[in-house]
Length: 86
Image (tube, rainbow, N blue to C red):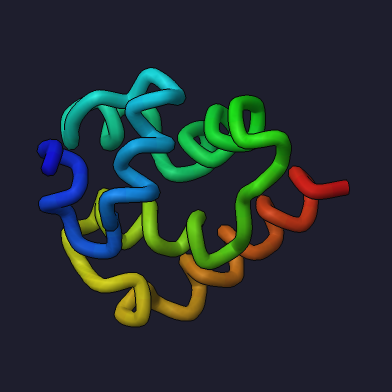
């Protein structure tokens, strides 16, 4: 188990993908931000990313379960995700 998988919403699979993308710990994840982290993941995972992954990363950054993200935050993330996937 690595440090990232101790964060809310980050399981072993997502933690391994984040490591592969060059994000090694909580500090680096917070510095990168959820949107940039998803961009990094998309480049290494051949677009094998989803909106829930983005929510999970943002929740981990905020230290909460992604279900608890406020509506405005979710809407902004959703708009970003749809732009990224065009």
